[in-house]
Length: 275
Image (cartoon, rainbow, N blue to C red; front, top):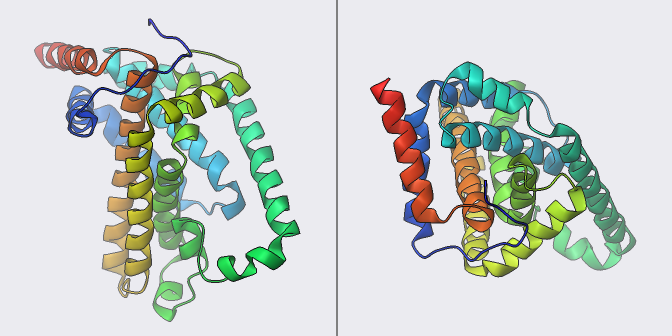
């Protein structure tokens, strides 16, 4: 893989191109992505502390990236994809997550110190979709099973966390792709890639804000079990799509250009169908 830590500008038309590339990846190994979807469902059913939302989101993105990278390289069998997840450099990733957690704790301490000045802002809004749903106290929401509330909160919350923090998404991708194993270099590379591709970052940020608005709108209308279950299923699908878009972002910023990505994935799909 001809890559470097120097991020490149994303080619024009990335939004539609990444959608096409994501569909090609899904077609290349449908069984692997169905299994990945089920794993994401199980992971998000469990209760997750709000304060650990960013480290958990980084771990989830690492799993999605590992599957996408394996399929991109033509490894479409379940056992090969499983080996790719096993071979992810989890120790460097854990160091990156630790540094991120320390950074978040430092920011929280600053917010605590200046809580007198921030109280007016924080009392009228939540910082994420997960926070909105965690703090929802309507009778309809409380009557839903706890596992279903966790599934909705975690799935949509993780998707919004990575959309609103694209530099973390890129930092995780740099390590998963094997470009570097040094956490601080991955973090700097992610920040640089965002600065080089400000327009892409702004679209990700806008999508995050729209998702937050959508959650605020839906949270007052989830009156039935069926509606909540449908939202949770779609929420995990959205999380998977965010992961695939994130992988395309990593590949074009640090690896192959967009046109070569589509061609290489198409060849992998053709080989799997021919076999």
